[in-house]
Length: 295
Ligand code: GDP
Ligand code: MG
Ligand code: K
Image 1 (cartoon, helix red, strand yellow):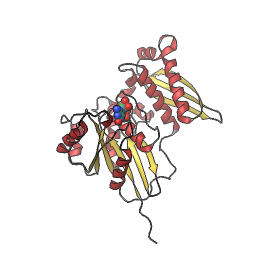
Image 2 (cartoon, protein in one colour):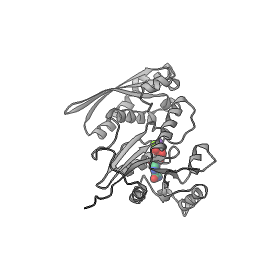
Image 3 (spheres, helix red, strand yellow):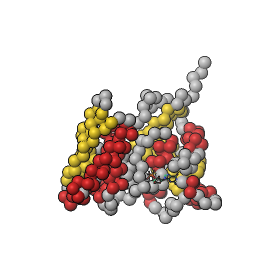
Image 4 (cartoon, helix red, strand yellow):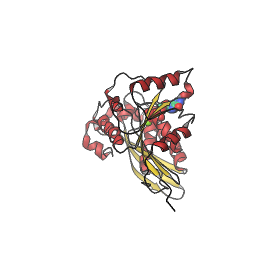
C-alpha cells in the first residue's frame, strides 16, 4: 500500500501595518495568538501559529509589517520581516481596500519573488460596488501573483477558500512539529504582548513605542497564575506618564491586562507591574538582545 501524501510548510503573512495580518492569522489558525489593535506596529515579534491535520501542517508566521527602519528597533523588526521570507514556502501578501502602491522600495521584492505568493485583498466586508475587484486588478497590473482572493479576516469570509489555496501551493513534506503543538512561543511572550496591547490602548503618541515589557515571573498553580512584569520606559518623564496621577493610569492597564490574561489562560491571574527607566533602550542593540528581539 502506498503512503498517503502529506503537505507541510511555512507561510509568511506580510503587508503594511494595519491591513489585517494579525486578524487574518487568527482567523486561519482559529486561536487568538497574536495581538490585534487598531494602532500600527504592535506586532514586533515573529509569531508562529501551527495548524495541523491528518494530511497537512501549515505553519504561519505573522510579521510586524513592512516598515521603514527608523530606529534600531525598526531595523530589528525589519530583520524579522526579511528572515520570514527566507524559509517561507508560501507568502500571503495582505492588502486592503485602501492601500496604494507608491513605488515603495519595501515592496520591490514582489517583482522577482520566487516563492509562491497569494494576493489577499482583505476587509471586503467594507467594499462598495466593485471596489475589491478593482483593487485586485490594480495590484495584478504591477506584480505577478500565483493566486488571489478577497477575504474579510474580521468577518471570517472566504477563509476556508484561502486555506484551500494555501494547501494547493504547499509542497509535499512531512510534518515539521509534533501535531499537537500550537505555537513555538512560551507563555511569557503572550503575557508581554497582552500587556503591550493594553499600553497601546491607554497611552498616546510616543509612549506606547517607548515601552517594553519583560515578564520575569510566571508561576502557575492549580487555582491561580502569579505574574510579575516590568515595563521599561526610556525617560523619567515617561515613567510619570505611564504611572499616571496617583497610579491611576498603570492601574487601569493592569486591570485590563489581567482580565485579558484570565480569558487567555482560562484561569485566575494575579498580575503585578513595575515601571522602570532604561534610557534609550531603543538604540541599544545589546539591550534589545536582552529583551529577546534577536533571532
Ligand atoms: P496588522 O497590523 O496588519 O496585523 O493588522 P491587524 O490585524 O492588527 O488589524 C488592524 C485593524 O484592522 C484592526 O482594527 C482590525 O480589527 C481591522 N481589520 C482587520 N481585518 C479586517 C476586516 O476584514 N474587516 C474590517 N472591517 N476590519 C478589519
Ligand atoms: Mg499585526
Ligand atoms: K496592528
